Image 1 (tube, rainbow, N blue to C red):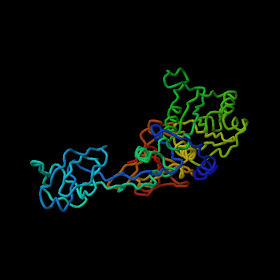
Image 2: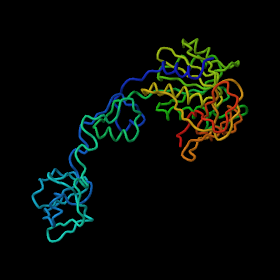
Image 3: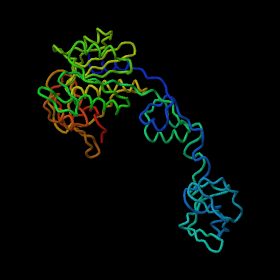
Image 4: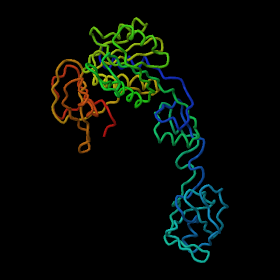
Length: 400
């Protein structure tokens, strides 16, 4: 068996970013930018007012009343004529300012009287003015290559006129659970049957990591069904993710089936708990990630190896799972010599992160796993970790 770090590196090297597409900004959330987005304009593109008020020359406003120009300037109006000597121009928030403006006097502190305006508070030079280019200069990189696009990035790309925006193709992921006992979640299980929880879970994890999942029918525990699964792999998906059928039992048919279908096994078995029998293979550009069938094992392995694969396929320059450090809220005893991922709750206490392990019945205990937002990463050959020890935690959900 290989170590977790070795397995992650194998997955990273095997996965390359997909082709570049031009994606409408309305559909680009969560995609990865395939090129730098530079602004083609200054922002603001001209001097604008930050308040409803009056554009004035500061020295003149300090001396007394100013003559009010007829009308007003609103956002969207063309730039008005320059300020004349002794003049005040009424402007709305976002309006272009007349040349010569030294400050904007807010309406709340301006007194109007018979065509004149007087500032009741002395304006400071530059007050309430947004200067051209003070936020962004034309040519500045607003969205760097390799950024996974958040809502704020979409806003910046729109400011730069990058619609559509170049992005790497979203990874296409086929999700297939194995097991003759499984029925869909909307069906009542009969004697000896179980509802499929792994399929919906894995599809959700794929979608949350930026992939486009397609859930297949459950694969029966027969050589013929497994052969069909791998014969079709890669036709319409970049990655096939399966759960179950990868251990050493009589009906764990997937590793041998993959090899018969021409897949090269890159690893099968990782020194970790849960998830020891996880497998990863490729045939040309087609990739297969075989997860164990126990739901906690399947989830943890996906959060490690599935996350690495999808990040790399999406074009992220630094792919893979994210770990944070936290202090143990209580001592932890460990059995076995493999690297262990222990369900836990991570919280912010007193300005620091603390993590508390959850009591669990094992890798089938989906109810306990559902309470976890992190997994404590316990190094191999560890017998006990003391309260207050600094540990690495794998994020399973957005963290505090």
